[in-house]
Length: 355
Image 1: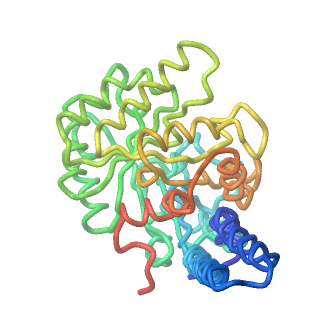
Image 2: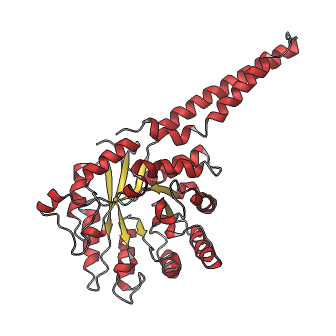
Image 3: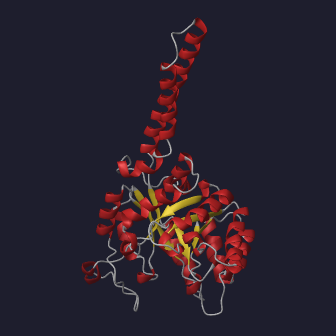
């Protein structure tokens, strides 16, 4: 896999250049001094040695940054028209209007310098995972899968979850509270059984709170308290936009407060969904800054939300936006590595490696 493309390294390099500049200034300064006395000669030699060491360190950091594996923690694929004819049908009423096949995705990833991705089962195929499964088997070193939890009252979704993780090698499961039976919560008997089974199998649970974190905060807190061994990933920054009033600030604070549970991770994904501005979505900078302060970069992961992001800013634009946003706040090279791929790679160990 291409893990050393210039586009993948760019976000890391921009934070390392000042180090080399400092070394250059030190060398220039030493060259303007009068003919050296013994003391000045010693000082000059020391400065030159330090500058050389800093320059060498900078080069090592740049080299390391250029080898950072960039991983997309959140995207979808669905059938092409030809694949539909081959039997990969859509769920009634969920036929997409965008192209979202794996071939198109791979083209976009190659252009953007993205090395791997976590494919989240799309609502377009509902609980029929056959299309995504076929992609996972075809590209085992490129993709891993996140299946969709089926919260049916009869409990059949629990067996399906176990089959997908154990037999089909899915690595995570998505909870969409909108799919629970009317009036039911994610903390009902079936929901807790699904959540517990995911933890037992070592599969993180991604939660999509599209209607707002405030509606589900109590359920999420209950699941965290009752099942501390089950990892949670909050999709799309829990759909929190930059707060404009007290109610929105309260919702954002509740999202931040979940950081007290060490098993909770965050996807800094689908920026077009959480921004109030046009590309490059720089108003999300302060959101990200506060999330880093509360969760730490090692619990944050970037995601594009392909193919929905394509008509918004393009796939490459989705990755480039991270550099634009982090340029507005103080984000270290190390934190950039975590956000762009290290967090998700460490969470799903053994993924995105050559067979």
